[in-house]
Image (cartoon, rainbow, N blue to C red; front, top):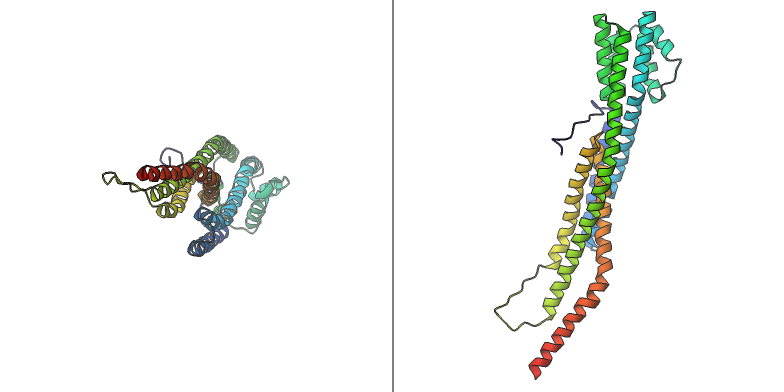
Length: 315
């Protein structure tokens, strides 16, 4: 999927928010690992719930990354109208400072701060190419970086800024529309993966419980025929493997969802935390729901079989 699906780079370069995200991620991993080790050693709660609690701190960097993605997308949404307006006015007045003054009579939402800083630099006689470069660095989105690079080079080459601005705006708008369509399509895929993930974890939980019940049946049932040797899987080993199954399966499905969604890849940590919580709770719920049923119906039959064998031997 990573090879087939097109890459969708929203953010370029590093920023203070990217550094803060890394700090939150390292803290979440450290806290989650500590909680998981302590709860596993103390054996206070079942291991599936330990997995849920240990990965819960990953929601913090995941939510922060989602906010970053929302802010970057908002900047990209406002950029086409700004660059078209700027190209038209700059072609008429011939002065970048006056063009930006006229442009700022309109409101461009979250992009307004970067445009004002861009205008102040131009007013202070900073080179246009340096102003565009700093504008791109502050915004940090791939569309704005590419568009500003084209505009800066077009000014140096003496191009028709009205046509250049209109073309950059048209391309940026088309890219935003494609991203919106991709997000809409990925929601269906995301829903399917979530349902299948829950069903998979329920099946693993059922399998774990059946192995435990089968192990109890074999341990309580005497077998006199040495030709038949039953070696059931150790239920303790299966119980230890369940957290690994939850984490690995959740990570793979989270990566698949993120590849389909596109956008800022840092948000994959939110998907991992969500799928791990869903998988752990589903597996624990399956164990609890089937525990009484399997114990009452299957183990009672096993005890009845043991009593019949003992009665036949007496006869």
